[in-house]
Length: 143
Image (cartoon, rainbow, N blue to C red; front, side, top):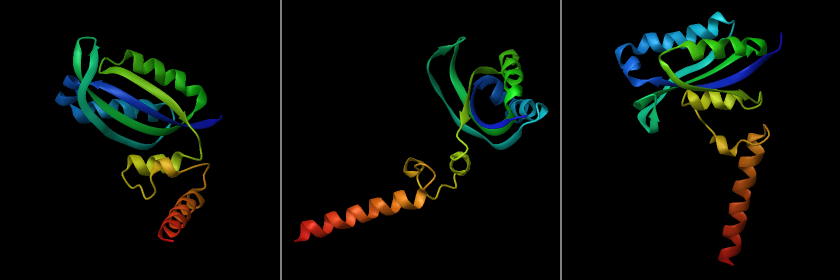
């Protein structure tokens, strides 16, 4: 059984979420854990007006989940999501293993290094290289 890291952004019907926020979020978490997945992060992302109506809804609640799961079980979760009436949309994305720790930290709002500066798993070299270039430019301007 090969496992992979996934990120999923769920779009809930805001009315369902407002009536029972814990219950709606728990259905997503239960769906993943019942399939044998391990949840790394599960949190409210945003609640906002939609760019266009979806099934007559103008407002939606976004919920972010990052998890590990057997790759063969993803179809099962996908089907369960399609049958869930609280979900308007959802999108599963397979994550690169090198980025999982940084994305989890970002989702938990514990970011030390901005995620756009992380390149090929070498954080220190990318940050240090930018600082050296800035120092050289400052030194040449003063002369």
